[in-house]
Image 1 (cartoon, rainbow, N blue to C red):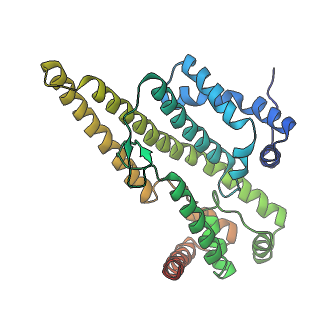
Image 2 (image 1 turned 90 degrees about the vertical axis):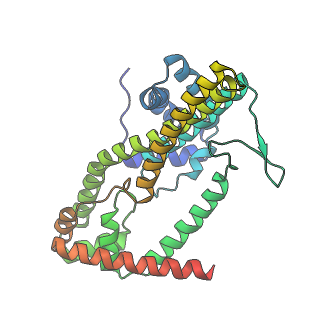
Length: 305
């Protein structure tokens, strides 16, 4: 049966309805994305079809209520957000599988909470998410204080992640004496082109996750096979320590690249210059100034909080 094709706007509306728990919307969503969910662990982590089937059931059970869809607020593309959700679900599913097969050796922190991660540190994702949301709100607040013409250059530079407001679209239309609809169409086309770059970035993100899972697996093997003073145990210990060191180093390098912004999708200056009718040099200088202002204001806001 041929799959129904939805526009970006229809997908966003469908996701919004899913967030309310609308059963018909959820059914439509799973009809449309079920193959993507099933293929995700095969394509990204090269798991077997049997594992993919188990993962699909696990993911479906956690998505079917629609509650997770409420966390999508449109600050990134839906595909980026959804792949991130699938990736996190895969990590959770792998942990669940491991807990069923073996008794995990957990540690207890000073607050009495158990934890077990590859760095042997408590899982701070919830705190990190709360902090990220605070920073995001601060960033949006600071960005709104930037002069409109400069803010537009900044938003176009990161248009894959940021949306232009109606008044910003109107400003471009008036400045370039072109219809607003033409501007919207150009920006939509540009965002679609940039999505190909985001696919590459997602592969790098997935590689980080894959390395994370590999490290967890190697540590589990070490617990099982590298205990004691036997020749065999020492052999496994040496081999697994070497493999772990290599995986840690690979993961570290990718995370460093990510932290430096190498995984960000940025619009080429020539495209921004074309849309705004200004020089590429003007784009470069304006963007540099805006970045400096945002950094200063963010530091100022952080100092006040």
